[in-house]
Image 1 (tube, rainbow, N blue to C red):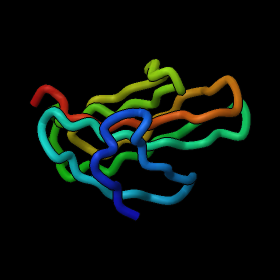
Image 2 (cartoon, rainbow, N blue to C red):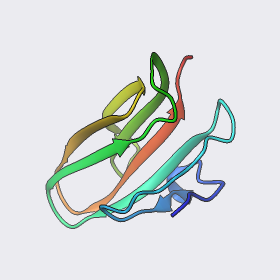
Image 3 (cartoon, helix red, strand yellow):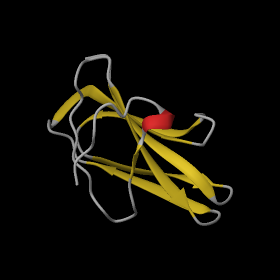
Amino acid sequence: MSETEANDSLSTADSISTASPITGQLSSSSDIDYFALEATGAGTLEVTFGSPTSSSLDFFTVSILDSAGNVLASQESGRDINFSAGVDGAGTYYAAVAADYY
């Protein structure tokens, strides 16, 4: 599955399901791609990000957000990363991918 443009806000986020990878590309240095995931209850959301680079510089910021856009967890990396965030209950949560400083 591939992302669609423009998915640059919570309201235009691409829907994804667990264990289904999605590929994407930032269209510019200011682009932020959002992906929506429905949680059926309290638990842990895990994000695995496959970076196109393998660098010690922080090329990407990947975040997990709640339905209001509050950041629950975030990582900056130029390499593949895997991290998680606890969620309080059922609802829509988001993953966001943005270009970082470098």
